[in-house]
Image 1 (cartoon, one colour):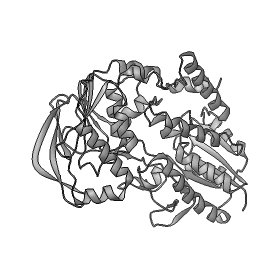
Image 2 (cartoon, rainbow, N blue to C red):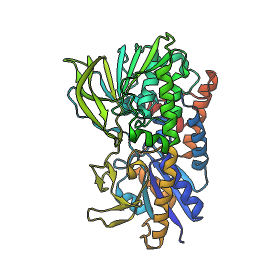
Image 3 (cartoon, rainbow, N blue to C red):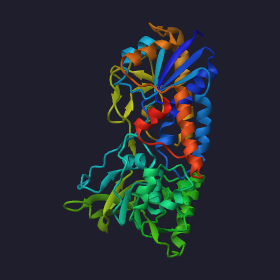
Length: 446
């Protein structure tokens, strides 16, 4: 195969896995990881709660890939702002888009726009120290509702219920710690539309809820329903069985009298956020399983007094300029990673991987097989790809400098990484995140 200059737009796990696979399978491949943020790792760095230590192992593995000789980090560069599609075509043989999904999927119920109603993505970005979100978050509510039946909903519930001082062993940013110290929440209610065998929690995430001595986990027995389809799901999946068993243990456990409580309500579908000037409650409809894994409303409603509502009903990818996009599915139109035009014809040299390829489903590790499929398509096409007009690796950097972009390269990221580790060591921790973008750029560029 001929040598390959590849641009991967997005330096999260999906993009880094694509860079890893192509450089392992093709000795003549050179990859630029183009990232709009000053730091790599995407969802692992900015979409995961700081008290998940196992994520650090994923970061270490991704770090080893980013440090390879034939992979170059090009950070603080935005596609559609600093670079256009024509620019990428001019400097690279091919482009892989791996921009993920960071917007909230909408929930169309009355009251969703009331003050005190929030999207999960915004809150997660705040507590994960994302540089592009406000430094403060309002945490005055004593009773909070979280709508959703996935791990993000559990993360939000745990972050709201767990005292801030229990986060001091993590890499939590200083502004987030100070914000959480002002948190007034005592009761966090998580609402799932279906029963115990249909929720999408993973066993480890569910068990983690009870690891804080300051938090009681209360699974309300109403809605704990196991029908024929549920039993089949339990029998077919060890993970589902572990989730149901854990929920059952919570049902049977006696509360300890801890000062904070996480309530899990099964078979409750949100129908309205209550309030006139701001959130005052959440109305849910009790649902009943239908024997096929679905649930139907019963016409019986319950009002729960809360002062804030977080919707964690899924992430949504954003449309990229000049790239065909399926707005209904929320993905770049593709066939095995090849980007398709409006007529379903592959666009030469354009590929996609990760959540923007297949939707926001699966755990972080699942993106590796996804990247393998995309890279297989790219390498199968390599001899037919039009060569870049300017193959010089310095060309893209000169172009960005001419655009006024302040690029953070691999050395800059190493300086920022070392600075965060030094901050952590000074405070008796492993790392403390630098949050404001301007500070990150200044540190990275010396």
